[in-house]
Length: 618
Image (cartoon, rainbow, N blue to C red; front, side, top):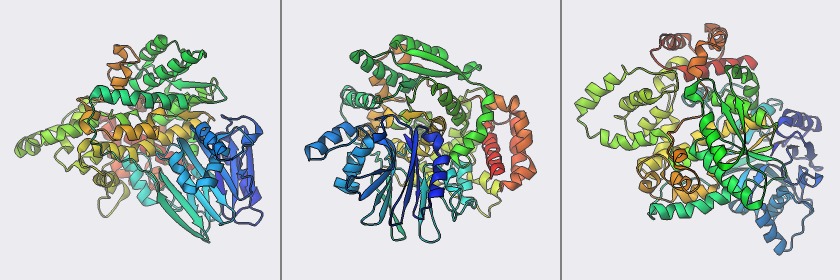
């Protein structure tokens, strides 16, 4: 796992500075390479995980001298690919997956991407064709941002902040990106908060040659399954794929552990890790759980029970409201506003876990792949709800929904009921967007002083889904938006701030494809995560499988009233909001509702705090 950067206007001093900006991602080694004939320069900082020797150093030049690669990520099937290449006559000078990737790309070009199992973002320079290839992995686990330059050139990096250093990059605020941030609490690809910097979307590649860049999609999830095996047959087929995904991600030449919440996603991963270590006679799995003083958010007992059942070497790591003090560091890692406060938990958890391990397996993606969000149930209920008389839905229930109270103590049932009754009368795409957005178009119009209500990009994604079946469209939308833009973004940024590598078995693309090929009724089966629970019942006690779902979130509503009160007073002021391009009157109303307990606006308040804090650093 590493940091990469480069430019088509290379300067040795600039490349060295880029290494400095990305050193936290790869503290073990760093290197730069400049084409002797001009045209491109590459920078790389290394976190050594596989082949710790200098043989894995980067940028890596092919033995023929034609190709140079800067690679961030892991290729889990590199041993299989290496054996195939050796059978075809290739000889290797290292044990690294980087060399396997380089030789496979030399042999097959972009067609090699179909063979890769892993997480990756890389740059490949072809000295003969004078062509730069940028590639990001299928699901978007590893980040890659780029900036078109005025002279037709290109700059790129693992992080936005590194591109701030490059002369000629337009750092003006992108107002549409700001609107999308308010809607999602993150800026969805391909935009960033800066007008001149863009994110390469997941499953895409960019070719730059002769001052022109072309972007191409090489993989995209297609949740439109029709296969109808029996539930037992489906579980039988999925279990070996999931087992393979976990075992692949345990391969490392450094200590490996896992994050364990006690929920089904992380518990299944820990169970399969323990199964593998027992079979190989290895030491107990190292597991880590973050604990909270607030009981509604704390999962220490459930996690300890799972760890005890599996024989893990378990460590509890306490959290606290002091985590807000990590905000400036987190914003530096993101390079733009990022409003999901769970990122601070991962920031702190990664820092503490890094004292024990270099690699940690995590359960992110289980909700998107295995249909684990309560809103999926809402989407399926909506069709039935619309059979009620319109006068009852629109004239009675929707107005009454505004009166439903909310809780700031981690209990979301009342809020979900209000959101369902308010939005279920809308067309499916707008309904789903209303559920997953934070500031709706009316609120964004007021905050940004726009002449008209802004668009709903998540509704557009929903409408573009390959299947109109509600569950298909909801999962497709989340796999293309919430997963890469939110969960994977903060997982990478916060872990790599501490040189900790996170690996995600539940979004192995082989597993994603196997699940999405199944019919919606089989994926749902009457409840959340039916298929994953079927797998879990073969690995874990029933009380773990049947435990109610609980998200991994900080008690932000409580913290805003206590520890974060001063931050609210310092940052949410008319002057600070004006500097961030936000009108004050709607912010004032939002704060009043929060203080009086009329609405749980905690995440909206936090998003505005983050925006003001980011703006102050620019």
